[in-house]
Image 1 (cartoon, rainbow over the protein chains, first blue to last red):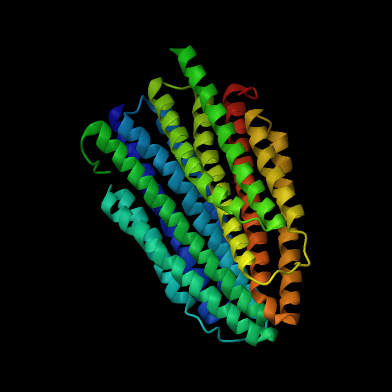
Image 2 (image 1 turned 90 degrees about the vertical axis):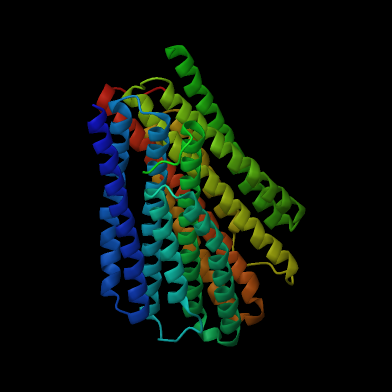
Length: 221
Length: 221
């Protein structure tokens, strides 16, 4: 019984990793579309959302099955609850990728313009935060989770700088207001992705700390 | 043992209601500040965020304790997992209220201007969606949750209209770009609040459906 339970926990972890991979791929596709202007990629982001939503439900159901299977220990309970919360955050990372790709489609319908900001660099940081937050969870590494929290300020600053630059730029180029707005919104979407990474990192700390307090050791996963 | 567990479930529900009340109050305070320009209220929104975050953790801990207390039935499991997820959404409604009040502070530092859009009306709808989503959860009312989902389109349309109006307005009034941007961002924050209400409503449907399937009746809470 315990063996089957442990196998279930492992399956849960694998599915969550897959979810993370799908969310990350959605962001990277949306950014490819932004860089290249190839809106065919945007369709794939939107289609991918269904797969992400359905995997989210699958993970929740597996978590419920595991909780129902046997009386889990406190450390396992925290792990499963953390999975359910992280799962929701990853799904919303996917939502943000959809939002970004909608802006890219909008941009593709407007006169082309080179926005005077480096949005792909911001996207790299946001994606790295999500990846590291998930890795910190899989490795039960609270220190790594704390480093994710620290980087969120950096992302917020990038967002503020990009917004500021684009606002000044649009006052000087009133005919480009829509393109600048798309840039500002994409930047905010990326900042929201960072917030989800932050939420995940906080859940990792919550889980590891609880495991710590109740068992006197950091769980190995 | 079962009685203590049921009391715990009731306590969990009460705390979640309190969380909902605090999130709703944060939004209504932020909108008061928007209407009146009284930024003192904004400080209270920011301070209230700590209370909301701490109640979020309290609710998660209680959920964990309940899961650890006894082998819950499937319907109780789904209820507890739904609480954990709804809890996270309510906390983020509070975050959006903080974001709105930051924009209000920004507006207060800029030359005063009457934006040509009805943001308070949008806020009313967003708050109503959150309130109804939470009520549908407490009453186990999937039909009510579905009505919340339907209203999300209305909110999205309002957001699109407001953004569109303000973008046109700022191209004609380039010196007012920042004020218009604040309006657009507040509108997006309200749309995100609607998304959280939508998430909550989806969790209600998930929970009620699961309870339905496994027990052949709609749970009374």
